[in-house]
Image (cartoon, rainbow over all chains, first blue to last red):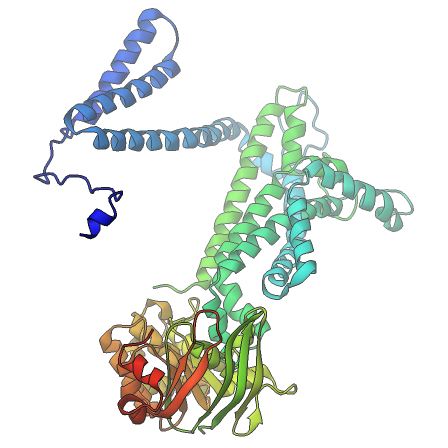
Length: 362
Length: 258
């Protein structure tokens, strides 16, 4: 009766008589893959138009088409679409992982050549173009000090700023902070280097240095801080917003003051995410070359003092060694790159473990 | 311990929206009072204004007079945290702190307010968990995370957490709506026991529950969407459910509302 009043309602699809349907045998997909590879190889090498890469590309396309046709014939249209899309998604995953695997492989294979005690124990002081020795000790010291100081400056500042914006900020001031943090995210690293060069190296540092401007690792740390700050503020902000409001209310309802609720309930809950954001910022800063080159100047000898004289860093070391006219320098550059990646990896894993120790084991 | 709560002409806003208007109600010490009414009628808003949780939301404010044993809790000189320590609250969804163990959850109110002595904390935790009928279930795993308990256990953990700070009044905002009947029964039993020490005000959508647990019942309602909620009738629970004096109350409890 009511259905006559609403004639436009779509009808449900007809029910199949049985729930069972014909299925491709389990060996079908691998068989299609093998056939696709063989066919592609025959075409490519038979016509002499390419190498193994082209074989893989053509085989992948043939596999997708073959899979669709075979499934369509046996299992039907819906099932064919499902299988083809699954295959496409898996291919996309492989495509995304390939460059990563390639980078890791290149770094390890080329970087292992100079992976010796000498590399980690000496600097480039008095190393000429014909010397096979020389290492990145001074650059490792520089990276650790610069990134360490930058983190000391930025982490408290960034986290407090995010807490202000999320928990306390109302109105225009908080909006302005968020806006400028967003703008800061887009600043190219060379610009932060120029800013610190103009502000710190040329104007402030002469006060401490008998009137002459001076490069220093601290200046590099300042430039890296400018780069790290927006990343840390934004990621911490997102993590704090993810903490459910009922948790805050639960603490308020116990008579806990707001600042203590933030310190003891909100921050611990968001901690793993905040640590991840901080590590991303540190990894980005550790890989920066331009600001370090502009304000720390680089250098060949070991300088433990970040407040005076030139310092190098691993990224800068890679840049300089890669461009040097010596047959020994490319190997040093590769090993320094491997060291940098390993350093960031170790720091990230350590930070994650520390953050997790705080959570409770089940 | 338990105290009298008096509301006179309480009106609450969310920004420009008036959620409740001119609520007048007195809750006697050591009783259970149920607030019932259709969704959106302002029961929860009223409940949250009793321990100043309403103003946590941006733009929310309360007008009128709310006193606890004669003290105005909205007085300028009143410390909000002191009010909330005196008037505890249990929420609709159990919200144990995820980074804390069962033990730490129960003593969170004490610990975050500066109590450090381990003996005091342990004593309070056991007492609160026993009062919440949870001790026997968790005594062997106090160090495990509070979030690992079942929903009903989590809610009793939250009740234990609330009574561990020894409030005078306990507010409950639909404490059983996310729970199964067995856990609901456990919490209703608990309310009977807690009545000896605390004044309890509970918001519930379940009228059988209101009839079972409460001494007095307040019926809230709205004319239509967008209007402020008003208190329609407030009387002994038995009277409300057997012989209400207002037509609206009768319509609501007999299911003929709206």
